[in-house]
Amino acid sequence: MAIAQPAILPEAGPFALYVVMKVVGDKRAVLQQCQSLHQSLTVLNEQQADANLRASVSFGKSFWLSLGKGGPAEFDGFRALGEGEVTAPATGGDILLHVNSSRHDLNFYVLRQFLQPIAEAVEVLDETYGYKYLDSRDMTDFIDGTENPKTLESRSDVALIKEGDFAGGSFVMVQRFVHNLPAWHRLSVQAQEKVIGRTKPDSIELDDVPENSHVGRVDIKEEGKGLKIVRHSLPYGSVTGEHGLLFIAYCNTQHNFKAMLESMYGETDGKTDTMLRFTNAVTGAYFFAPAAEMLNSL
Ligand code: HEM
Image (tube, rainbow, N blue to C red; front, side):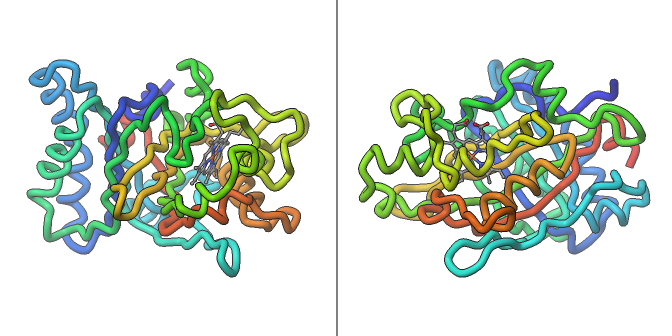
């Protein structure tokens, strides 16, 4: 089996960095930086004990196709969804850098080193630093990740393309959500649990999961089989500024992302995810993370 890029399969460390970039200059120079990233992290990990730096580099559809490798047949651009107050914008991007580690300062350092030689060739569209919050909670104070695949085997099974030219690669979905916590806190705990579909203290699924709750929208079965994704999301932000969840997930098919988004944003059956009354997506994009060998051969 082709080897996946390092950030995808292991459970994330407590800090992460997510950077979406547009390439505006020397494409070859940018690609070379992407290719040398994993080697520079290996060196840093040797110098900094317990850093556990891992990264993955992924590409937006039009940039990927411009590299001349063809594409995984399914690879699609992100389509804006929703209407009125509940929308998911499509904000694009050519390159997504996802770094996770046990040190916030090193994530910052990695991006500085990465950008230095190519500062003129890329425009950074979004740079978000995530951190593990309490016992892996989102800022709504609900545990996030309970149903995420846990073993290496199941994560690999869900995230990685198994065979063909793109084996070991993975589709990526990113959305940055800004929460409205004052509105959220006006709800009673019982009302919040109905919005999420799980209990607040210990993340137990409600006996009667409301259809328009978050879990009710994204826990989708097709032909008796649950659609799965590997989430690497983390909370981000400051108390008095913007804060929320940087949602990111990997999957061996884009279909699962599309089915979940269509269900959340009211396209499947007209019902929308009630959680979206308390949080708003400000970015949205799909990327493809090639296997490590393929990245090196670009
Ligand atoms: C489950 C939070 C966005 C997919 C959950 C859970 C929480 C949560 C608290 C329950 C515990 C768990 O199983 O992890 C959030 C927040 C979001 C967000 C705060 C944005 C602000 C999304 C998006 C998707 C998604 C955009 C996919 C398009 C899932 C899936 C589950 C889940 C697949 C597991 C459902 C199950 O099998 O029970 N999320 N989520 N989430 N979420 Fe989200």
